[in-house]
Image (cartoon, rainbow, N blue to C red):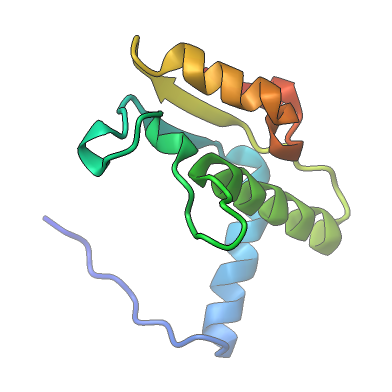
Length: 119
C-alpha cells in the first residue's frame, strides 16, 4: 500500500523544518543520472546530456545538473559548517559512455571534483 503523505506549504514552519532535516541528511546522499540515450529522436546529433537547456547561454543539461548539486553542497556547508561532496553516478551505455567522459573532461567536470563523478 502507498503511505499517506503530508501536504506542505512553502515557507511555513513545518516546511522549513523538513527542509532543514533533509539538508542535514545530504552528506549521506548520492545522485544517480541515467544517461544511456542519444539525442537522435530529438533531432540532436550528440548525447542527451549535451543538449542545451536554454538558448541564451546554451548551457547543457549535464552542466545544469552539476551546478544544482554544487549549489546544494554549498548550502549544506554554509548551514552546517561541514564539507559535503555529493557523489554523482552517471549510468551510461556503450553509445554514450565515451562522449559523456569527453564532455566532462573538456569542461573540467563543470566545476565538480572529478573524484565525485562515477561513470
